[in-house]
Image (cartoon, rainbow, N blue to C red; front, side, top):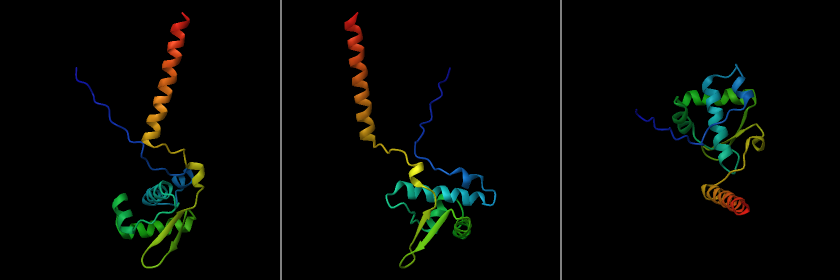
Length: 133
């Protein structure tokens, strides 16, 4: 019998608010682009995405022209706001309450400490239960 190796699941994922996901007026690329913009804004502390059209196009697997169209669609629907800065840079702000979607971020070090603390507590409880017998 062969063993099937388990796929390691990364907890790094993209989110699309239901309102954006269910909007039939948006193209599939626009929905996907919103998820990327949202992720960049959510992961950073600035709460905006500054990625270029070239970079966004590479991520969603489209052309820069498609990215520009998608950005215009998202602006027209009110899902993002674009602020142009000096030069060719810009800031794209997703227009949803980021605090609603943010979870408490835990670093790998903190996760390890939490695991060790929980493990220690469980071991102590187990020892106490054995001593009571």
